[in-house]
Image (cartoon, rainbow, N blue to C red; front, side, top):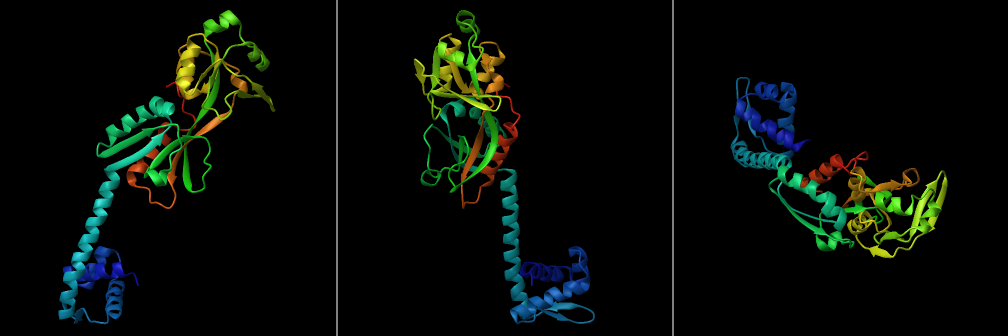
Length: 300
């Protein structure tokens, strides 16, 4: 027996004064309505209604039960309404963490738009390149680059970033443009230390992987700093396109070997496993996934 359906039918029968009227409102037959109330009486082991050929009336037990169950059903309806309202108008604290450079350059504009769209949501953001323990720190969401490596977490792909090798046009005019990967050995290198192996550059020559060891004189743990030094004509750098693409678009940088640098790094939304995802978190994940789909251009 569906207890909730039976309780609602009982209340509706009392309010309408007949099984046929209650059945019509519920979209069932009068026989089904009668069976629901009879099963409820059997379950409770009491008679709730006195039935005659002309009318129905409440028994003393039915009157007492009606008062209690009506209050319970009203509370359940209020809960449903509040949850629907929360889904449509999310509120509360949303704690997230994101890498420093990606977070300030690309995530912040998205968070600004999200904050405007959901004014009741409070955002607390930790921009750090350290891997934060979501469970220990009470973090709802982490934005990270690279595939998910922890089975205790849940990852959802938001988009991709691509690796670009870039140099300033003035630098190339003075030093020459590399025609093949090996030519990079003859150039000044600006190293992004955020890579797992910052001095090893990998390119694809058809199906053949080419690995070059290119230690740089200028070494920064920040992709923005690498791009800044490269725009200043101090060498060639390898960085994610979310930071270099705008400068390539406006001509401050030129991309080298675009066909040989197809590497794509997923941008992931990481949440703790075994925990219900609050509406505000789900909405932000969906918002970012729509914004940063696989075809997103970081120079927009």
